Length: 143
Image 1: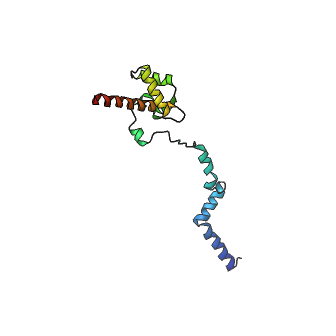
Image 2: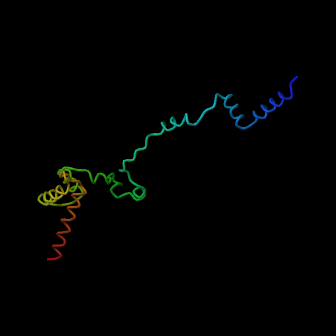
């Protein structure tokens, strides 16, 4: 026969086993042990590729309003890439810009002096060409 003290302890164990935390522990033990989310966190992170943003991709404005050139496969970084004389001449001839060899050489020289290493891009060449054309326009209007 059980003493009153033993019955109180047994009743306490029964009540404790019905507590939600204890029930969870019992279920975890029956299923295969208790698992913590910390042990799985690195596995989930390893499944995702590392995100790299080098700043050369378009922002939201560029995605909503792409430039005329990007529709043709030419992007902003292509305008600033250094190119040699032959390639610059070929690009501007290809878009229909007519200029003499002498005019091309003068513009090339001015564009190459603006870069510390003497490199010329499509954008720098276009900028100098615009300045030269603006100067000619001013001279014709003054005359």
